[in-house]
Amino acid sequence: METNLSNNVNPLVKFMRQPKIYIRLPSQGNFWPAKSLNMPESGELAVYSMTARDELLLKVPDALVNGQAVVDVIQNCVPDIKDAWDTPSIDLDAILIAIRIATYGEKMKTPVAFEGSEESDIDLEYSVDLRTVLDNVMNQMEWDPVVPINENMTIYVKPIPYSKQTKLSLQTFETQKLISIANNDSISDEEKIRVFKESFNKLTSITIDLSGDAIYKIDTIDGTVDNPQYIMEFVRNMDKEIFNKVQNHLEMLKEKNSFKSIVIPVTEDMKSKGVQGDTLEIPLVFDVSNFFV
Image 1 (cartoon, rainbow, N blue to C red):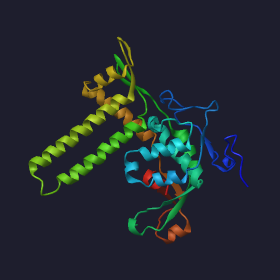
Image 2: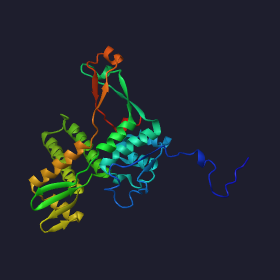
Image 3: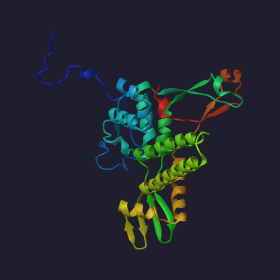
């Protein structure tokens, strides 16, 4: 029996993916450039499960390293996000957790390491409730943009977008490869020094530029500056003490908004395998390369 396609409506549409959950972003939509995010009036974004194509994308090493796989998966699973490269750092983890919940459910098994255990023979696992983790992320995320410098200046910072995070990760990865090559005994000392210097200069430049990208406004006794070009020029020529204050503030925010360990009760099965005490602290590490396995 042939199906009438004259109305251009796919008769299989009702069998296609539907939103599994809805989430609010920790940033509440702040720090997103115009047109990168379509924020619904409800403030909640629909999250769909991954497709087979999405899962395959996350198994391509190059696409993971350069961030393209993560961007494609986010945009496919959260259609209201139009440009995932602009995802602020404080929103990224919540989005990825939501996608995993929508795809595989609320439970995620994680290995349990304990004092005296060997990583190679750990056979303990704990089932983490990702709904609880997501709720904790939503409740703990807090961004303080104000960096007081002195009586003449106040700097305001925003979360780094995913595109900039990826750039730093790529450069760090390339630097590690270069250092590994430089440790080869067949390379001359002069060449090793050149490679180390080149790698260090690139990393230093990216680190400084990241600080510039994080600053969106500077108040001074002469007025307010929000021109990105002026700000970047200032960052590349700022006093070391000012740079350190900005970096320390960003590091504090990164630590404050990072995943915290969870404390779980020690079961009789765990005790039989050598776990001591009544509770055990498990660090939560969400690495995209294995988070969606």
